[in-house]
Image (cartoon, rainbow, N blue to C red; front, side):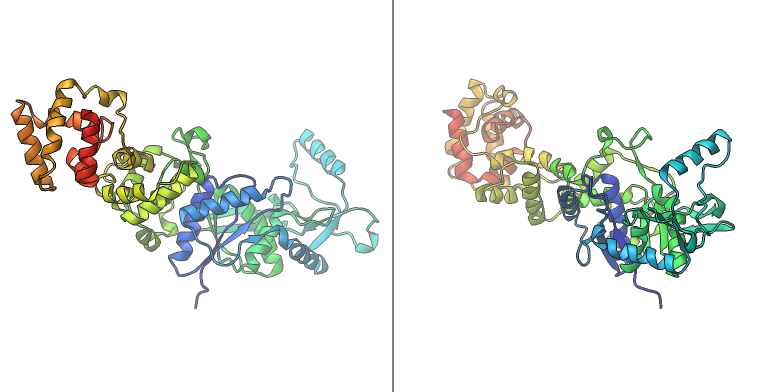
Length: 466
């Protein structure tokens, strides 16, 4: 019986959760959750100078926004330093690692000479096989005894079999001269101790896999399944820059993208299921597998993200949208909607969400339902309020007192009013928009009237008619 799937996301807390990291987290989450496995979170905070609590908080908030829940507590790599050193010392005791007393100056000198001679600069420590009785009383690092002949094959689920000649591998340092473990050791020990079965990460880590395998094999541990995914590039095919989308996950929340749209788009960056572009979380969890991941870098395309976001807004439950819009406003530093505005927004949602790409678009269309009297028409809307149309609106107000408040009856009333003034209803729509919303572009006049209700509609028209 195969072991349950355990994946992990292991960011360094030196900044926000960038979009590439978010995509890696999503792939790990999809793979584990789609197979009833565990998804773990480890913060790789061994770089004490660059790691900050604020960055850790930003990563956690970004994952929370994206809905990528993890199992168990967040694990700190720094907290495991004693355990990492214990493994290095075990390898040392078993003769699978050794103390190297070479100084930085000696290594630098060797490399300069090798370069000058046109030889490999791969450092081979002269201390590899020196008897401990001949060791000096001097600072040392602990290096692993890497195999020096044969090959190492990384069996990668995305890249295929990647073979590296062992004579190209150096004896990697495990413990620095101050006794602290290096990142490469910490990653392996943590993954083993956490029971990680599948390591899904960017293909910039592919070369690390061969070096990390030397630790797995020296310890007699099971090597995880590797899946090194291509990086994300900008639309120009170059490394993703801030101008082309290399922002933090929370910045996308602050721009008003719905989390479901972001998940859908990130899943499609480098992975596909046939020609499907739009899909639900349930479908992604069911479909996601390594064979759908391509080998070429994905290209970030803001228009595609907006398109998918709009589709997700259109099919979202109104209550869920309300909740997410409040979270968006908080993340963007804008005031929350009050109870009246929330109630009005919920009533209006049916005519707002069809064409909105992001929440600011939706809220822009919802302005008529969120604004309070008196409505101040903007410059474009005010142009529709000529004295002729203001007079027509003043005629309309009393007629609305007794009409049945249904779309059909409102349409009949407004069409007959237009006819009485020898004009078409389309000519009346502009002034009505200005009076009801203060904008030239709004949902349909009838939708606005139905949502605002009789009293509010009449009050806004009366304000305009003066």
